[in-house]
Length: 252
Image 1 (cartoon, rainbow, N blue to C red):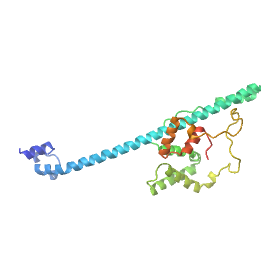
Image 2: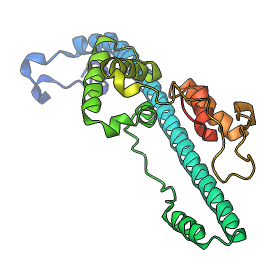
Image 3: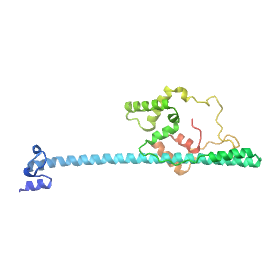
Image 4: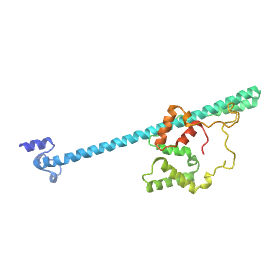
């Protein structure tokens, strides 16, 4: 066995009598070594490129999972705050009923308190686009109107086909735009002819039924601001939408 054959064997080459593959693909030791020196750099480069693409994919997946967790936590907290506000209001009204010796009202409020459902923590599906979850929350008609939901699904498929680079919030905004154009009567504002909304709820002793100061982004705690910034960067929702949901303000 000469030096070339020794080197070829180290690289995986086998003599013809030991070769178990397609006979037509067998190469002599010298050809095998020469081809190896030409192919190996290409394989290394391909491996490097694939590894780089996998890193990017893993980073995007990690970002999506982070966005989904942030969005889930946000909705969980807003639900909890709404529950706590409702409990506070009912208890305040109950105290009034006791002071007024109004047993009938107290009993009604007691039933309302018992019927008040505490938010249940749901397990988010990691395979679901967090942008789609946010979009459904902003568009309750998707779960309530079967015909509109079917139209939205078909429009989404068409938009994706025509604009493959349109992602995140711009994509869902386009779908909403198309649905509104098809069903304009479903999106009329019932309060368009009414007076401005007065913040506060019945029984809220702090506001006394007066218009209260609108809460802002700067009044949220650091954790909420960071969550807001992350969702805005991910095109999941706008800063205004997050602030309104966080403080339980009415959506436009």
